[in-house]
Length: 379
Image (cartoon, rainbow, N blue to C red; front, side, top):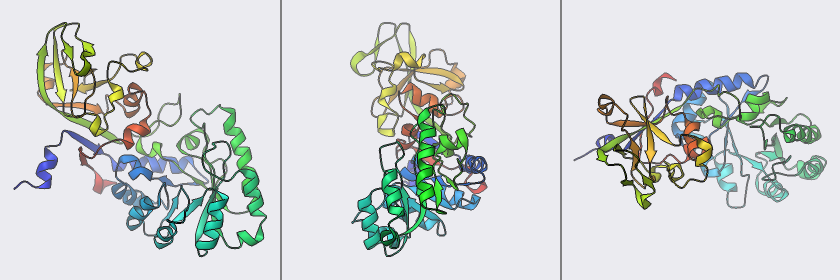
């Protein structure tokens, strides 16, 4: 009878996740946040990398504050962060109060309706307030926040431990909206006196630090992704992904490759068929034909075999993707694997080739990969 480990060995792709690099990135971001401290955003299963493994590593490194999107995410990481503060970014609604209170989660209240609900149902448990300063997504506007601060009756029923807002354009440090948001948020912070506050996401930390606030909230930078446009990425890479080559086949000039016959070969070619596709989170938008952003990506999408570039051919399919290995030496092909994300193919290069961002690539990594944490005990 086969075991789970036997089946894992047969996976089409291998996803290596470097916990030591995540810890090193958090320590770097924590240093850049001084005199504040860095929290860690671990929503979406730690950006697709496994919160059950990432959170304990960060706790061991000294991280004391975490942010998730949903109550269920907070409940899932609570066993791995018993003494930590866990903030829930979507706040509270009537159906979530029991989970929030039962797991000691702190809702980041995002509207006056949520404020009144928590004042009635929260039992005095801690809460945070989100203030919208230009994102127009979640949060009280500044006037609402200032009025709340002056409402002694309502505030007396709340234990507000944190104020937060969110940059809209921190990845573009020169955008004037950044300064306006800093100034607007200061008005709300001043109204609440000594309550702890946060504003900076990853890009905010790398572009300006904590901006005078006690906490920062890095996310993508923890996981090795680019955060600031035009700035060399100072973070250590975290993810390496490769796939098994199922077959290498020969085809003649003039023949077509993959669905829709969208790619016609201009020369006699050798084609590697890799065991990866859009069902694994390898985006179909990275296909070499029919992508609107193709002209902006130059050479287009590719993998690497033994350090040799292998352009993607035709359309990415559900389970398989074709790569041109005509120029790859036979000895390199003997390894039987193709690098999809790694030293030769950084995460954000993959994202650009797919017309998207590193966040989407990471959070889309599918469950069929064999996931490995090769240095888990060494973080």
